[in-house]
Image (cartoon, rainbow, N blue to C red; front, top):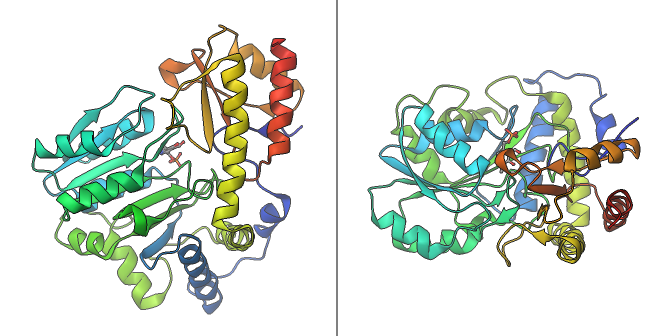
Length: 356
Ligand SMILES: Cc1ncc(COP(=O)(O)O)c(C=O)c1O
């Protein structure tokens, strides 16, 4: 029996989107594919209101951490770390043999422009990385304010924003955030199966990458975008079935509009926050709560594992806390296809099981 997913990815996928994957195969060098793929790039540009370069890769979002390291870090990166995924970025840069410093913040706290500007003064950095929506803590950092402030002082710094668990739910405009790379995965607020990632990339980032050696092939921004400029296709074989699903889902998303999706996500987030503050307490610092996933402090010492077992019998699943936050917190995701009615229902069941 299918369990309705209130976890921060993979998320519910609508039946008609799933069915798009059953279309007969086409060759990825055929005109039919060019039409499909250029259509997707066009729709993504419309959704994010940007003329920046866009690519869809057959990978999950983490590949963009390797891409960041291999294409942009010439001197040293400053990675803002306020949770598990922003830490993964820092570690990936180092694992690629590049230099990186960590600006470590207490988990639950958001990154603010002043702190970042101060840290940037301390070293010769050419890249800044930030998780706009830290899925492990449910913290939303003001990526637009940070981008504006940083680019004013340091126009040459490459600003890389991980929007894996927020894009398609939260309202994110790469032009206003001044990002050089904004990336995300298909299996979160875009409500698609896992397997695709999207990168929105500035001209400056592609140009800078040309001067950085050791970019690999699959992870080379110039290889990706030069090929697209010439052939309007992907350099390597893409997951064509998922591309069909993405194209179809983008039509649905454009119909709902980015603003409409944001409002729906915010409404669900507010419902969970209000409920959490009545029975427990929100984990993120006030004013910086995610609109796609709520992390709740388990102030009543309930068993989250037991709750999930009981929810499973009712065909639902939420998430335990991430890593060290397991049982100390729990997470209710409200993204993608979910609606306020779904949230009302899951909250009712949690109250019933935990006798709140
Ligand atoms: C903020 C954030 N960044 C990166 C990742 C990694 O993405 P993927 O699993 O698509 O590689 C995740 C996954 O949950 C995430 O939430």
